[in-house]
Image (cartoon, rainbow, N blue to C red; front, side):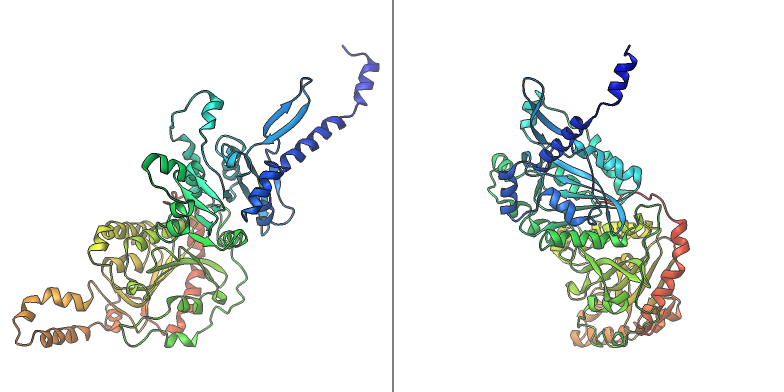
Length: 530
């Protein structure tokens, strides 16, 4: 037992040497993989992970977690001689004043391998769930390394448990990923398991395994960009949502996406000052759709005319291009926008655009964001290629996703709406859902377009006529006279035919009235299908 004198001496002792040790370790960790590797990272036009976090978050808001994790080297007396930080930097911070969890691989340390799933990165997902705040990930890592087998002295058996938390995250909080470097294995997997992902063009790539593994396994000799760059995964496969010009553009897109999202599924999407009258009538809408039904028009221009201040955040523009999806506001309230693009396949639903719609409806449904649909769809895309791509399966999945959604929706039938694709594009939710449907005078609707339908239903009559072409034209003209949207309104299949200039005021009024329904609908509804 210490004497009184010893206790008084100990009470006056300082921990300054230990505090000095803390500062020294922080300094060593701040060097990341060392001057040479940091210089190599910057020579490739890439930011370091610490620069990424500082550049993305509100200035001065980063609170680091796990900064002391890593591997220390010691002399014979147990004094620290060097320190290699873990290949992952993470913590808390704010974006536009809202708290988020943020983290990413440090490529300057072992190529960013080993720090995410089993190192300090394992703190990140539980923290986002416990705090019910968004999670932002910067993907720039090699995934699993064969060197880890040397370190552990054995291999391990995959069991899938590591992904359970990712699935739970998708059902509860917004998850965003910026692919800012080559990302393989589990790093790529987590980037894909996001509500919004963006890849830096020429810098980021995603693949199950990188070029050396691919060449050794199946003999394909490809560059990283050929294997998994934006041309592959943004424009062709749709694995990644958007592309960015550079890292700052990627940060900007994630901030924009988050501005439409609630913090979690128990909170309402944030309303912003509109700065745009809810009763504004846009004169140009009166003539935006051509009288000639075979001519296209600019659907994005139409959207810009009715949303707040013309601001529209588009997702997956380069994939499933006959469909437009993104976020906007009406009178300050966030909405999801789904629109057919008559410039691409006349707006027909392809397998890719159907998958795009399914994913987007899931996303809006998860975070209780109402949907506005601008409909101009002639049906499923037809032909042998479309059949090989599985348009029927993908299209019916879109129908089921829409029918299963519980969010309010309002559909504006701009022009065409035919067949099962018209079912998917018209309104969301089952019979009890809050939904409204209005038609423009330019509308034409049915189970099948008249031109193709006449060729099939009246084939024998046309073939047996003295003048088959004249007979076909006569039948088509007779049926076309019955496609008036006013006759559909008489049957009360739309709530009303409206002056196109009334579109914004009507949508603003509907979104305002839907807010109480949205509040009653808060809470988990299931994950978004990647």
